[in-house]
Length: 230
Image (cartoon, rainbow, N blue to C red):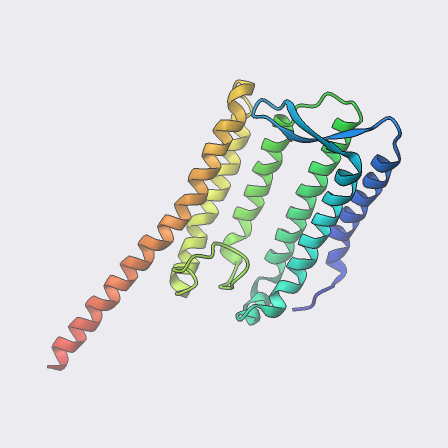
């Protein structure tokens, strides 16, 4: 799997865009503090030093991106990445795009625009979940990407079926998040959070149940073979 290809231009440009916004934020004399946290109603309830915010988040995004580029090199199952190279690229691109959009939203909030983060973060996360759900079935067994449980890592069958099920769960969470936007503002984020928690936990439970079922079937088949041999 090659580390850098022409496709990487898109996420790299997004990181450069974040750096441009960071320099603008740092140089703006009228901005002395930057929002760091919003409550469930979308109101700012914590502020931070603009120097910290200007530098930290672009550097964090760059670090995550570079880490995702090099992790396959040390994965014991690194040969499998070749089979889902495009899916892995879209995961990297989606994550960088999400962090870039969040950073730009923070920039405009710091500049004095009265923006409600609920109407940004819920649709942004919904799109992210839909994208991740779409590529989940294409991910082959590995130690860094996907739904990694002791049971999926133990079996290709459990891995494949869990990721197929997880795909529907992630897409469902994203779609429900979009519909949640039509509810009362105070209920949007808490309800979306419930959707996410349920649809993230469900594949984990499913992988365990599927492993137990396959394991029981294997034991039953082994016992039948032993009985026949006698």
